[in-house]
Image (tube, rainbow, N blue to C red; front, side, top):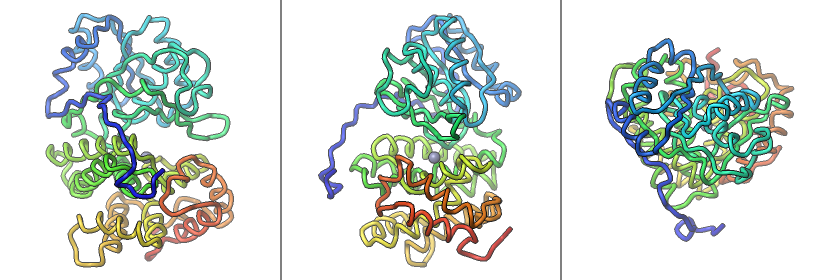
Length: 393
Ligand SMILES: [Zn+2]
């Protein structure tokens, strides 16, 4: 890896066709026909069935002339066995196209199943990159949250139920063929889902902006993602029906997802993986809680501090830009109704060592701009335990 980001190689081919616009869901039959599929598996969850979105998508798919099988029992943070069940049903249906409707869990379940249908075996066999033994079944992703960016990524995050480990399973042909972004689908999101997805997407934008693997291309996506997400996070929570703000969050999350494709993540995600494996915390909350502390830690290195200041200058305010960024991230947590201190989430001082050990073993840790190992993770967790500001829980 060249130490100068300006000389770091990248390629941009546009694996995923991104289609964005209010009401864009109506274009689904046309997008399906372009894939030429005659048997489609729609992967979604009970919440979207109850909201009526799954029924509408099923009708749009049927109008394209294809046979449709609905799998609507996706769970939060899908485990390998659940993805394998989905793949088995899809294989029996002779699936030619997956359509995933929902948040990151629905998208990752469909993506994992699309990899397993041809390759067979277990999800654990596909942990890592390029372990598939057959072409991945094509997929159209319709995200209904603004969060993970899975709609444009080659990786699915699937939990190994035996260890709690989040396995990133990816292949070159696993990125969805189409990401269909319709902000109208996000208008009915519960406040918690909007907040947690937004915190995760902000985490993606901030971490990709400074990671050791960043490139000129990821910089482009990371900065614009941060501008959109930071500028609209509070607004979607204050005015959930603000379609323009919803759209900005959806596009921001998508750009942040593309940034990850070209740059990897960092210490906040390594720590979040450790926290969600041991405590009942959702991914976005864990990332959000870690982010201000990781930014403070990373700002201890001059080159990274300068880079973080670039993000800070995109925010209103008069404080020093890095301090402005940290204050903004802490306000975002408060706005999401989350106490800043990790001890409010039942994390105790004696948990710090094992959590740091787990985080240090995460793949994403090596891409953090300032080197992190167990000792540094203990330091970051120590400051997060009581919260850097007055304790709110
Ligand atoms: Zn994330």
